[in-house]
Amino acid sequence: MEGGATGEPPREGEVTPMEWRRKHVLGLADFSAEEIEFVIDTARSMEDVLTRDIKKVPALRGKTVVNLFFEASTRTRTSFEIAGKRLSADVVNFSSAVSSVAKGETLLDTAKNINAMMPSIIVMRHPVSGASQFLSRHVTCSVINAGDGSNEHPTQGLLDLYAIIKVKDKIKGLKISIIGDILHSRVARSNLHSLSRMGADLWLCGPGTLVPKEMVRFGATVTNDIREAVRDADVVMMLRIQLERQKTSYFPSLREYARNYGLNSEVFSLARKDAIIMHPGPINRGVELSDELADSSHSIILNQVESGVAIRMALLYLLAGGHNAAR
Amino acid sequence: MKKSGKKLILDTKGVDRVLSRLTHEILEKNKGAEEIVLVGICSGGVPLSRVIQDKIRSIEGVEVPSGYVDITLYRDDLSRAGYQPRLKRTEIPFSIDEKKVVLVDDVLFTGRTIRAAMDALIDFGRPKNIQLAVLIDRGHRELPIRADYVGRNVPTARAETVEVLVGEEMEEWKVVLRENLPGKGK
Image (cartoon, rainbow over all chains, first blue to last red; front, side, top):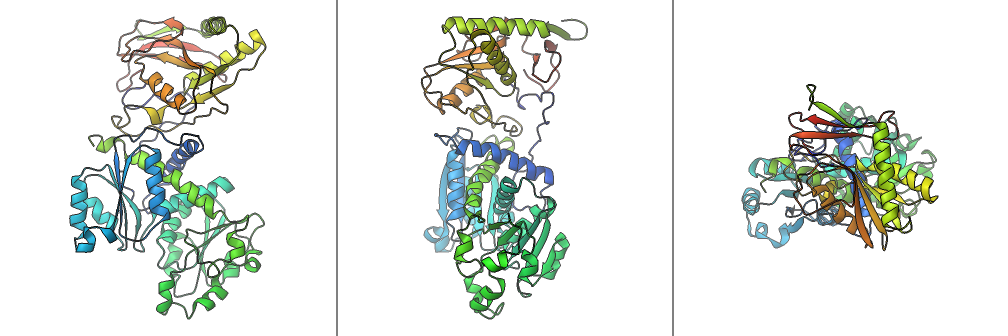
């Protein structure tokens, strides 16, 4: 057990340790199936820690994680904060509303200043697509994208995958339908990358204005008929309809949207008997998802949240090693 | 060290005899198996703790609880490794409060693993005491740690490696001392 610098040597019959070489997690577009499985495996061990009385291990002692949020967020920020604290990292929260950003500081200046305080990892959410990519080029620490515009939300993609695996034991061959505003959804985009890589039978559904046809390049089937999407599905993933989009002309009214693309018991009865319902939150009850279903035994929405802490612990742990050893 | 750079320290029978003696020592010192729980350190200590559990069963006729602990998240060299080691699982499905915990590992070397394992255990409860059983003590301690039960003391050079191949699924058990392959430390 007392290994050298590269960990203990692999034993007979044991998987050779994979080398994690990634410095940043900006999106799932370039994640291999092997990397995804490695993160899931690591998350399983992290989940063990979460079941103990003392839900804390010293792995990231002396490391600092900065949560840099330029958009409102409860779930994701809290989840990252808890994940960091469970690993004994020092977690600093920074939200744009009460910071120098409100005084007009640019993202680059903010980033450089925070970088100068030598954190190990910056977790950033930003309304502009590509912002985390930009940040990663200007800081020396690791960057985790916690959502950038309508581009990607990689930790959500991984935690959704993990939550499905925990119930279904696999991804390959499952009919998974993502329903709602695909066009503006970073959650959908990250899920498309990870789920298609793992071999899901992916379906995308929503009004024509919100489901770009180009999505077929992921091997997904695109439909405007929710019944077709839900029929025999193993997983139905509802996306949040952003209420502010109602003002634009993507769809005529919320009521009409709810009638055509909201999931209710009648539509859901077309899915497989053991189908599960997912939602990245926050839910607009009665719009994309009926009350009844949101609170039903088919809903794994709270399991998604639970999986999120384990996945984020796994990524913080994996990124905190190696390359930024000096910090 | 022979020409091959490899020396057999224990074979199947040898390992079995050593573990029998260790089991008797554990039972003697604790005056029986009462309050004893076994915790193997991943990965090398796990099969050994199972063998000891079997032996206690056949000697005393009792089933002592047995679990295992992965110390990766408690290591003191996490950011010195080139990359993060793959995590294994920890499974201690019983309370260790007021129990005599016997930690089991294959090779005692610097003592850092044991330090980490003790930290991990203490996060699970407050044992009455913690004892340490190892198959091989190869010296070179870097911390003030010693084993209560030692299978075999094997003088080694730092550059050498002690390989312990023991497991229920393995037909042949052996402990081998070999010249170190570059990049491996043990």
